[in-house]
Length: 512
Image (cartoon, rainbow, N blue to C red):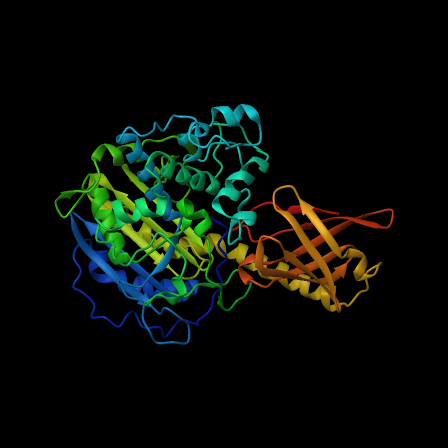
């Protein structure tokens, strides 16, 4: 997840909780007496247009409810059937699919990836030979978290082209020793399914073997056409603006097994019941318990440090799901972040407890605070306002980002003149991972066009030295300095950066 920046506004003070009649809730006092008011305060504090939450306990759906609105400026409330992009919560569906392939003896999770995808390559030959299906599903191939995602996310690259580009990702960590979140690994694993399962795609498997049997009729394994579906939440962000900005819908089906599912809390309550009943739903065994058990076997340690604020001591990644201790119980969960959406799904088998929270504003941690608050209530943890706690931690980062954006604007406003003509910067630039981009001189600006993102541009306004302010046409990509290097009067390279939600490190492009 990216850093969450959390502005204080009163924009949502008058939002309705939801149009539907509020149910009579059972369970801990927080659920019975405080849930609605807590969520309403959270929407206001964190500037979230809408949220949906479900809680499953002892085989029953205790909560399945919407709050706030689907779109700012419109009265339509979020309800339990409102669709959100659940992004990386897709990963456990993929882990489940591959675990089921092993259960059916069509592969082994410890088989080398190249046994099924002979053209698969990582950056070095040794890791390429050794990398297993389990490795690429466990974020342990040596790449840094989100590495390559700027190239892949919302791009026009096909699945096969992304798998090809994985070989260009130079690892910065040790193979099988360190955790680095690897979206392209899940895509690659999903591409193995048709090889071993008579051509059946990942999307078809998820639909036929999971969504349909679980009665998840509103859910889809694809983002395509999401904007035309009924009862959808629109995506927003406050990362670079103190007022929420509506974002374009992501188009990420080329990363499908990592991130393309869309769903609602009513449907996810079925998924939680399935997880909590050993693979059964409404008394029917949908998938074997052995399959679910495989997905929960820990593979990669991501943290062994006690949290300073939460009753957590360790965190391990399994197959598309994290596991940790929480108040002496073993919990399983995952978060998901698409541009404009952040979500989570969590279950505690020992307590027969499941939780999911879906939101349509990506620059906040309330979707996590609510999960922790619900866990606290059910597991007997003394009350701490998790929303305010996380807000106080994150708010300084928000202010720092706004300050950085303001400082760039001030540098642009000085209207300094570059040492060379804008046309001297124009041309084609190449990055070994991304490929080519073009820079054009357009009036008093430079404009970057991206070969793999035909809908994306970046306007460059001169600041000083060899630095320009880059403002992307899709606000989700951010506002950052773009810096050129010059040798002997010739422009040699351009360094650009995007939101850390997309990729953490900058890209350096060489002028051709």
